[in-house]
Image (tube, rainbow, N blue to C red; front, top):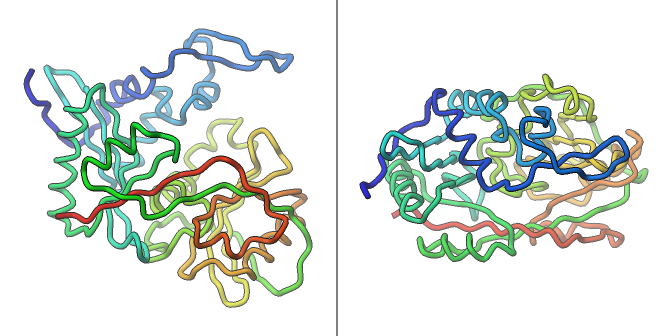
Length: 313
């Protein structure tokens, strides 16, 4: 078997990349009028129902929008071609965050049917990182995903952080803060900033996925309450993306980018803002370091995400 050829992805590759992401999905489901889960064919699902199985790659229509967005934003998007077919895909995001992340390339998706193709994509990414003078590779995966851990440790990657989900109550609080709408999606605004809340992957990846208004053409997504905010609390400036939780509309999911480490005053302001917006609770993914600012009534959930890194050699 010949080694695959690695090249930059093109819009013409959309259908084949979508196929790679959809292949592992063995059962397509939706809720019927009574709220019961029913198995259906892929063709019977709407764009939104397909989306719920794994995001924009689940249908060609949304995949084309997403791939175009990735390419325009200057992210790393490679495909592996073999015998005229697309057999692998790698998606990575350049980023610059405070230690321990530094100047890095974050591997968000590495999709291929076997390890040989994955390794070839990884070698290509290493060449790109060296040419562009990045200091580190990073990636992230579920703390319970032993296969991913085994694979990335082969490249010398080690865990540098772990995030866990917590829920806290919305409530009125004392303190002064200022909050305004912030629609500007330019990623240069967060260059050198840390992602203090919601970092399941990388600060740049989450920004590129959440801040631009790509998906408001889908009615079900447009109907969910979404807030893009500039916050200032006790001298801490932050950008916050807050979105009504899909199955618990009185809970809001929070992501936060800031030049400083997370402070108690920002959490207090965020709880007060959420209470004023008629939410009952907030769901936060926090690093081990940031948990020190949580209130005593915070409840943790079992979801944990490990972040791995290795220096570029």
